[in-house]
Amino acid sequence: MNHELVRLEKLLDWEFFEREWNGFFPSTTGRPATAPRLVAGLLYLQHLHGLSDDGVLNRRLESPYYQHFCGMTFFEHRLPIDPSSLVRWRKRIGEEGMEWLLTKTIEAAKSSGAVSQRSMQQVIVDTTVMEKAIAHPTDSRLLETARMQLVKQAIREGIVLRQNYNRVAPRLAIQAGRYAHAKQFKRMRRMLKSQRTILGRLIRDIERKVDHPSERLLSSLALAKRLHAQQPKDKQKLYSWHAPEVECIGKGKARKPYEFGVKATITTTFKEGLVIGMRTLPGNPYDGHSLREALEQTEILTGVRPKAVYVDRGYRGHHVSSTEVYISGQKRGVTRSIKQKLKRRSAIEPIIGHMKTDGRLDRCTLKGQLGDAMFALLCGCGQNLRLILNHLRVTAPKFYWALIQRLFFGGKPAKSDSFTNLVAA
Image (cartoon, rainbow, N blue to C red; front, side, top):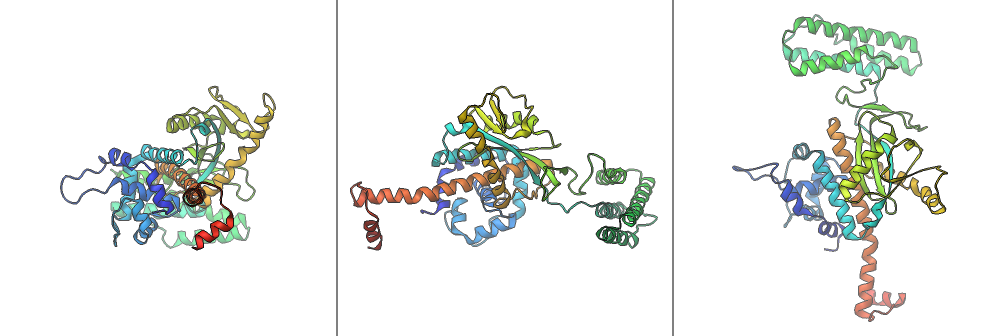
């Protein structure tokens, strides 16, 4: 019972999820609905250890600590739910439910002593790119994908095409990739022009032969037209067929000039690095324009209005007056203590790095803008749980050492050799 997950389980408010989420899946007849605590525990564990839906359920099947964390009273030898149930639960819970999950981790951090209420008055805010789980976008691959999807939709709708180009088009896509690898760009553009011509023929052929298209076919035609019309230097380009919300964002990195996903803003406490705010920013807005929304979310989740916020130079022109904003490199109105605190502003960068390597922030697998928002909040939950577990690992030896001193040495400080002899005995 001294395991870190058992101690963490006692800090979380599970009754809230049982009360608030019980109405999402009412069950009047047949099999009882899934317990909300089970789903909340699985979502926590999934982003605590960076697992997939299948992975977290398989590990739960093997680990008694996972089962205890999810509220089981005896060891089970089979999966409690199908992995697809997590998909349906996420859709029902929505972004608001994920914010409650993040709020409960903040309360657990305060209960464990990992962070104090006063620490939330000074925060650090920064933005990063949460990449989407898509292939690297190339024109030849996107044009070929659009052609294949239109042909499938036409067959499903019973439309007889004049020609489907199933033999010619794949060869053009392969040849375009070879020319690009050989840096023969004039020949590559000739292949792309042929692919674009084929896609335009398919679009016109389908529009001529269909009178009452289905909603799915209309959506596919809209994406195909958007892809057929876009040029290399256009804005609001389509970078993925199955994820049209993906944006191309450049953050000035030498190793990765462009990232394909959505911008996310992160708010952490100044001292401990606890995530107290996480939100996606569709449309790639300017960092300074997103600061007000980040501070409002922080106040809602924590109940504390930040008195000071430390940001980098990308937040100049923020127009926030209710909170003192200190920007890196700022000269006016900066005392010696503020100057020292501004040096610590970069402490948020390794936190973002841990969220991408230890968590799952580097590759969002959920669908749509709603999926991006929920995924970012869950990544924040995972980072907070890792911070709490690290705090429990550090404080546990101190607690037991103080207990041993009180029981065996009368509260007096014991020497190291006395402690060694006691443990050996």
